[in-house]
Image (cartoon, rainbow, N blue to C red; front, top):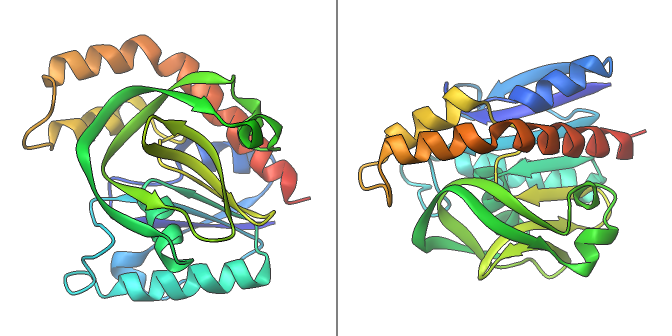
Length: 224
């Protein structure tokens, strides 16, 4: 199976999801929207994060190509898993509302699965209550009409599904330790010091990556 990994810059990538895909015998093709433009079709698609945001189409006109591709994959029923910016572009493309969050979410955030999340074939691999590793200043405020909420942290939509083949998460199940600490280091006004954030990541990253791999395996199991 060919898995397309859509990225948005040099410091994002499929990471743990790419590892799991290759372990399962799949071919992973990385596609950077910043330099490659309109993405091709594939047997399954992963869409990851980035420093860009919905609403910045003048600065990043390739966002329109991403919205178009996401609508195409939804219409065709292509297995799709979107993360952070990917979750936001998917929501926007499908008719949801995305805007700047009232706060910046950095580090582990307590989250809870909905009843639909508990029963979901992908997100249901998580415990009902879990700490999600976030790095976002924007969020989905209203889901697309066909979407089902799978997990929340208070008012923050952490996970949703559109139909039976498209999943999206605001948190980062794919991330590596040095990668996310590097993102935190770039924040101009973090809610806590970099040392505190790094220590928090160090304390929880091993368990979190187990969750991330479990989510990846569950997603790829739906593509059979």
